[in-house]
Every structure is written in structure tokens, then in C-alpha cells.
Length: 342
Image (cartoon, rainbow, N blue to C red):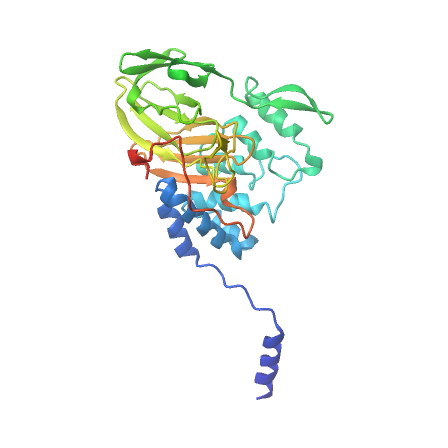
């Protein structure tokens, strides 16, 4: 009897242990909802990650790095910096997100996006110059010094654009012209025709941006805004312009209020860059990945080349501070919801 009383006394005075999350159930919720559109999927994924990480520790995250769902593995790598923070730039560190994407998933990471991610790591004294210099050698035309800030060189990371047909903003290496009921998109020696009926119209004065990846077999065309609203990604047959599939990149603003003409365009927490929203493509034999970069909140989403089904989604803002709850009401003026966005 005495040992039981002692045990009861000890237990009464002990701190209650946190209930471990049901990893399998939460993983299923994430895996199911990343394949949905942003209106139905984003909030559920955010909430599931919040629950998954609420009582996580380093050992649990180490196991999740090998999870078969790449969305969970990537988010766990990002979360790991709370336990293994990088104080200096090391592009080969296993827990450094761009390195993990390239080494574990096999997708090349655009240099500009890698810099955007590096700026979010807690490097000592906030010195990100080594990261700029490292990636600047890989992409000198997009990452180059533009002056000095606080005694260190400041770098330009914006994608330079120009206005083309239908007031579409496109990168300088991309030309877009009208051809009857189509638009002709040209990049270097390659060109594709695309049905202009698929081009989103200007809404509330917001500009339409077009970023493409042209190849001789199939090409990818994305129409997006300078704000992080969800946007369509088209896979087309390069020779005919026929649409093989359409998917939606989430890239949503889940929170910061974007005002235009006195109208609030978005009210949710961030899962994409708030403005200065540029995107970059990377393709493998089986997947095409869209990397979004802005001032903060980088994201990457990958899709199966044959079917257009989402392979994984990652955003630095899926891992928000505890207690932050995204709003469920949301209006996106850039995409016509009647087109079956979800």
C-alpha cells in the first residue's frame, strides 16, 4: 500500500505529460488535403501541421524527415531549425532546406529561391553575405549587388519584367504577342500557342504576370499576380498548345490584408509571399516544381507531369507561431471561382 501512496503523491505533484499527436491520422489529413484546391485544403493542412508540431521534439522530427509524404518531410526539416539552428551559412547541412530538397527529393532549387530561404535562417549577426555570394555565382544575372546596406552589399532579387500583349507582365526573356484567338509565347528559340480564353483578366487593377517553362515536348504556363493569390498552372503540348491538365498552385495569402481601391482582397495567414511575388520552375522526368519567392514566406509545390496531381506542397508559413489561427473566410479576386478552382 505504501508504494502506491508514494506513487500517487509523486504523480499528483508531477507535471502532466503532453499527449503525443496521432501522427498517422494527421499525416493522412495532410496527404489528402494537399491534393485539393486552396479553399478546401489549405486551412486543413495548416491546422494539421499545427497539431502535428504542437508537442513535437527533435527525435520525432528526425523520424518525420524520412516520411513518405514529402510535404511532411519538408515541413519537418524547416521545423528542425528550432532544435538545430544554423548560425552560419552551410549549403551542405542536412537540415538546410534547399540542400534537403536537392539531395533527398532530387529537384534542383533555383538560386534566387534558395537565397530567400537563407534569409530566414538565424545566422549570427544577420550576416547573409556568404549565401548571396554562393548563389550569386550560380545565377549572376539574377543575384547581383545593387549597393550597400549597413556596411554590406545589398542584392537585387527581383525578376525583371516587361509589359507584353494583353497587358501581361513577363520576364525579359519571354515575349507574348496576340495571334487571333491565341497568344504566342516565345522564349529563346522556342515558342508555343496558348488559348487566350485561359488568360485571367485584370481584376481591380491588379496586373497579370506570366511565367513559363518551354520545352520541345511539353511546356508549363503559369498566370499569377504580384500578390500571393492562388493561381493556375497549365501543362500544354508544345507543338499544338493543347492543354493536358490544369492545377492550382496555392501560394495564397492566408492573412495579410492586401488593400486595393479600399477593398480588402485577402484575410488569412501567409502561405505565400505577400508581394514582389516571383516564381521559378524546376523540372525532373516525373515532376514539375513551382518555387515562389517574395519578401518572405517562400513556398514550393510540385506536380506530377503526367496527371497534374500535386506531389507535395511546402511553405515556411505553414509552421506559424502557436496560437495563430487562420481565418476561414477568404476572397481571391485573381481567380474566377466559377472555373472549378476547387
